[in-house]
Length: 413
Ligand code: 0X9
Ligand code: ZN
Image 1 (cartoon, helix red, strand yellow):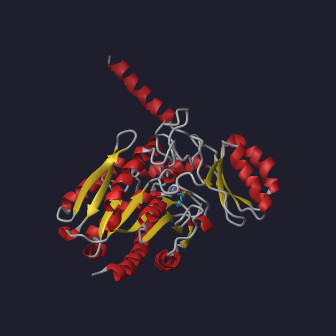
Image 2 (tube, helix red, strand yellow):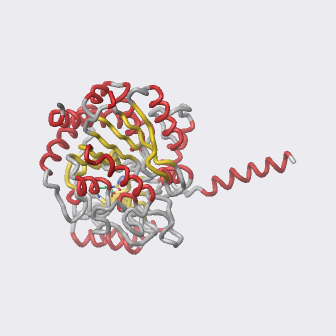
Image 3 (tube, protein in one colour):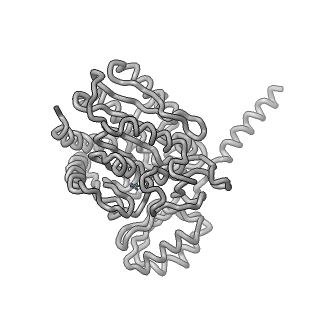
């Protein structure tokens, strides 16, 4: 009996391991198209080779595109692409070795949340509860709904003195594989309650959602490190999930999103089809009139993106966004020299409709709305080593402080 139990146990472990998507010998190439013709080669590659995964999508001529290529398609890259583009360099030699190193570092992690490892969603939620319990006069936690797989969608609200103040709203980990973003969200929470940033609680209230897409995040931890979307299956076919940042209502399905359920930028069957975005939109609706700054945390590329991501282009107060964005970038660079670039989404990246920031700016005219693309610029991409978490948080906080200074001048009573 004991032996058979043991065999079942070993079998379960083997099953769990075998379920994991492996990226052995997958490489990441950076191609910077020099001409419209080269750009077309990349667009064609994206359309006709479902096996290659674009970590960074095709943009304008002169801007880099990062492409993850499985080993069986390496000859195709060599023969079909390399000769047709001038500028192709290898960024990652073996994606799986980055994932292994990351997994190794989490084996040594402290049992409770710290900023030297990436943690499961339950541990992040535990941090919210512990923090709220330790600061019960200021902080409360709650959930604004449930995910497709029934995980709570949790937030922490910071309201000192229980008074109405302008709200700063922060969303993180809308995209599953962008792990660095939840660490920034929890760091901000800690700094506002226990660090040098405490003073901001006299001027602003904060609502922070560290994991907007908990199903996707857990799936990227347990099964496929490169997962981006939710885990729903409304499309009906074999492919799961929609891109939650293509699923918000404002400008939904107006470009830069796909109607194919297997695409990484699948818009979903309808606007707000995903329980995560529907719940977030309903929650935001209740506090949007008080929200003056909406911050959506993503990775990677070190950009400070200004709406709109649609053909509406620049927002009327683009100059204010550039001005504050530049001030934040300067502050961030001061610590370690990390360079962030501000600019309109379409100008710096691509058309992308249905994002949370566009929803806030477009429907509620939120004063300030940024998408921050965190570290790095492609050496590790989404698999940012855990020893970069604390430096990322420290430098980001420098930038956030400058943004809040600017807002305080405007909003302080
Ligand atoms: O494409 C996205 O959703 C974001 N980039 S990412 O590499 N993290 O996927 C940028 C979102 C920009 N915002 C708008 N589309 N409005
Ligand atoms: Zn993202």
